[in-house]
Length: 248
Image (cartoon, rainbow, N blue to C red; front, side, top):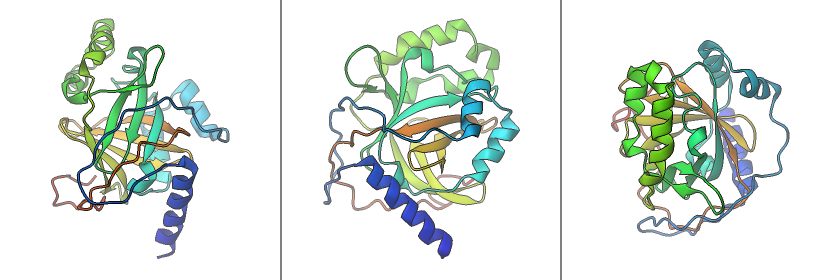
């Protein structure tokens, strides 16, 4: 009971820090155009994260750090987030950044853009990750690190532009802890999240046909709130093991 109360208080603090605006109501969730945003003025990242960003870590060390962090609720993931991959020797390390990967955005638990791209002036754009060659890069790691595939991804990503949400947020048990997760609609991918601090989360991507190794990334919340939406009253943000998602 005490742990749940503490997590709820932390989620409320994080939601307040994001300054997000939601209209309460019943009905379909409608995505709104994205606007420019600036990162929050936040405290310096913890020393372990700074070292990881600069030098990379082993997959074992990365997983131990993920397990040591606290859980958070789906509501705590609302807002727009700047993303950065964290190197562990994974085939996807550094694949998206040269193409202009920006991060992720959630206007509600039902209206989530899991892949934002930013090039030049203007706000980031949402992409549909359905056609990304994730499985190919994982089956043939050398291809994932090749200049050819990285060039194809860089050139092809803008063609995936969409205004439709492409993922949902749920609370899913994973590695002994129920925490927020992002379920992609048209890829067998789940991003699991743990709280680093009030403004940062550590993400772990699972590609379900080939779950290991895990891909790690960090998200930092932006100051600009997401567009106002009407949340879907049917969604509780919770998923159990029988709802089509296998817990870790």
